[in-house]
Image (cartoon, rainbow, N blue to C red):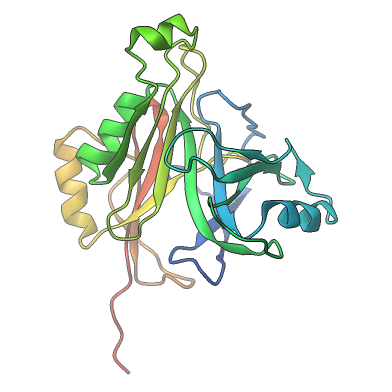
Length: 259
């Protein structure tokens, strides 16, 4: 399924009380990958964002537990979450985590309210957006900001840096796509590298999706594979590669069991 021969994995799932979707955490016990920490603005960099009822209170609570704060909280000045308060943290594996308090949110105790969005830095934001929306079926919810082809973007010396957003129509998960700050291509981390991330989308029929996307030229690690153990026993999954090495998974849930 993963394309990594003879691999062995430990897998866990976490979610807050307000989440529809879990976050999957994977450790490759064999073969061990590289420590692939990406700096902000490099292809393959990413972060996950949870909403919170109070950014400052959350930072205080997490700081007491030795979580590294990258920058002070700031108010977002553009994009779909304009006016929200945001802060960036780094976990023990070097993964960047964002906490965001929506605009108008009152004072709270710093608890997490739910998964807010996942952010990916890609080589070509327009290409990645077309892939997610036109081939995988996500919904575009905002134009590219700024437009990498506009003269104002070039005049600003941004080297075409832009961002856009897409939403999964069933779960509501928002994916933020950010164009890398350099035009140089950089390889996406391998799936067993520490710090690699993939997006997983649930489908009704994984075999039909596999056949359809294969005809469209999508590169898969292999055919659909049945999951034979764990909480998803009886489900099917498959890994695929998008533009620039962007990694995704398709997942068909286990059959409904009637007691």
